[in-house]
Length: 225
Ligand SMILES: Nc1ncnc2c1ncn2[C@@H]1O[C@H](COP(=O)(O)OP(=O)(O)OP(=O)(O)O)[C@@H](O)[C@H]1O
Ligand SMILES: [Mg+2]
Image 1 (cartoon, rainbow, N blue to C red):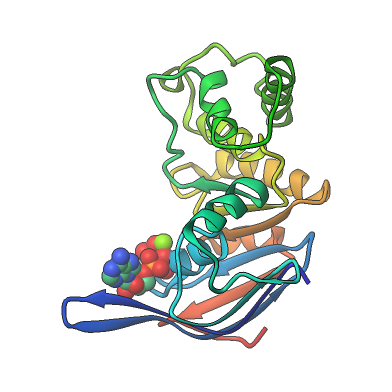
Image 2 (cartoon, rainbow, N blue to C red):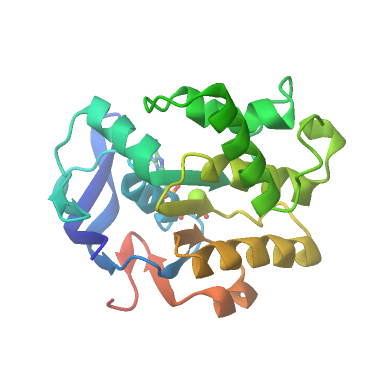
């Protein structure tokens, strides 16, 4: 099992009270699955994704990642796990507009402690770009690309450290339906090459791409998984 959660709870501090955002979540995810997380706004989807992707902590329960208990790891270890195992894609692409495409994709490598020669770096960046069909855009700037192309760059950036999991929080939320399908094709191909994909979406039509759909309501799973 790649990921196992046991009775995980997450509270957000709201002044003097706590908001119970995730309630006794149990979950198992295998390497190579394509999971979609659905549910109304505020149901806890992003909260769950951020915890699974080592961006956020939780209050009780257990998180086992690749056989190791990562429930109480330090902030440093969390960023280590993030760099080594995880790529993130967001609705708003989150590209840096003052950097060109090559430099945007290079960013996660700068934070990676692995020693990589300049030539190897260039190769990895170009092969990530080619994997999303944008090998000719290395010198362009984000504002010279369409929304769909910018999201492809964000996918290339997520791929550059060769993660085993890609987390995508509404990656098609800002795109029209045709461009959304292009992005889904890219994600689907990555999944076929062995990447585990965990994606949040509001779009029922996209669930055909998933190997499993998880539905959240008020911080709880609607269907037991
Ligand atoms: N930093 C925070 N502090 C306090 N409450 C928060 C915080 N982040 C999220 N919440 C609350 O936790 C609940 C779950 O939020 P979350 O962002 O996970 O929802 P979501 O399912 O991703 O919604 P959306 O579809 O709108 O993105 C919401 O009620 C939200 O208001
Ligand atoms: Mg969200």
